[in-house]
Length: 484
Image (cartoon, one colour):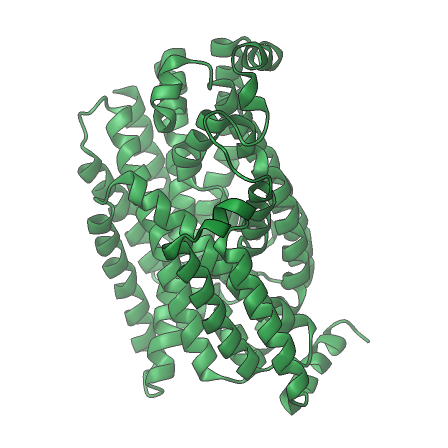
C-alpha cells in the first residue's frame, strides 16, 4: 500500500506544482516557453532527456546480465558532453534570432530547405516512438510491481498517461520544465540516497559487493561479459553511436531554444552531462553488483526492484517513485518535442495557411493521439520494444553529420544533406535488418556505417558546389552575437 500511495502522491505533486503553468495560449509559449527558462530548468531538462525510466529495468538488466559492458554509459556521456558543447551555442544564437522551435526548423533554416525540415521532422518523430513505448511500458510495470500485481500494467499506464497528457498538452514547455526540476531534484537527492542505501544494506557496501563479483563472477568484470562472444570493436561502436546520436534527439533541441540566455546554455551544457554520468555510474555499479545473485541472473530486468523490495517497503516505495520520475521526465519531453514537430515541421510546412491557434490545437491533440497510440503499442513484448529502442540510435547517428557539418562547415549544402541522410539511413537500417556476417566479425554497429556514408556524401557534395549566399549571413549572425 505504501509504494502505491507514494506513487500517487508524487503524481499529485507534479499536477499541483504545474497548476500555474496550464493554459498557454501561443505556439511559441507551448514549444519554447518564449525563451525564458533558466539554468536549473535547462539543466534538469537536459538530464531528463537521457535519464530514462527504462534505465532501471531494461538497461540495468543489461549490466546485471553482462556486467562491466554496462559502464559504456560513462565514456558515452563524456562524448555527449563534447557534442553538446559543439552544438549548443550556434543552435541557441540562431534559435533566438529567428524564433526557432525545433531541431528540424533549425536544419531547414541552415540548409534553406522545407524538404529537409519535413524529412528530419518526420524522422525525429518516427525514431522517438519506440522510446515513448518503452517508457509507457515502464510506467505500467512500476505500478504493477509496487502493488504486487494489484494494479495491472494497463491501468498503471492509463494513470501515467492521464497525468502527463494533461500537463504537457495544457502547459507545454513550461509544465515540462517545471516537472523536470521536481523530478531531477528527487532523482539526484532521494534517488541516489536510496540506491546507496540498498548497496550497503543488501550487498554490504561497494567494497564487499565488488569483492563478491570478482570472486564469484570474474567474467562479469571484463569485456564483453559472461556468455557473450563479440568483437572488441563493439564496445567502441556502441560508445560512438550513443555519444554522437545521444545529442541528436529532437527532445534536446527544444530545451536549447527554451533557454533565456547563452550563459544559461553554457552552464547547463557542463552541469547536465556531469550529473548524468555520476547518476548512471551509480546505477550501473549497483546493477553489476547484483549479477552473482541467482534471482538477478534469472530476472535481470526486475533485479533492482527485487533488491529494493528486499530492503523493505520504504526503499521500494522511494525506488518506485524514482523510476516513475525518470519515466515522466523523458515522456513529457518527448511528447512536447514530437507534438511541436508534427504541428510546426509537418502540418504548417505542408499547409502554410494554418494559423498559430490551429497549430497549437494540432500540437495538443497530437499529444493525446501519440499517448493513446503508445498505450496500444506498449502491449508488444518487452524484447521487441528493447530491440526497437536500441535500433533508433542506428538512425540518430546518421543525423550527426547533417547537424555538425551544418553548424561548422560553410560548404555543407542541402543536396549533400538530403542525399547523405537518405542514403545513410538506408545503409544503417538495411544492415540492421539484413545482419550480414561482417557486422559480427568486425563488431561495428550498422549506425557507424550509415554515419560514415552520410559524412562522405556531404563532404563530396560540399566541394562540388559553391558556398550558398545565405550561409554567409548565418555565420555573420554568429560573429555578431559573439561580439566579433
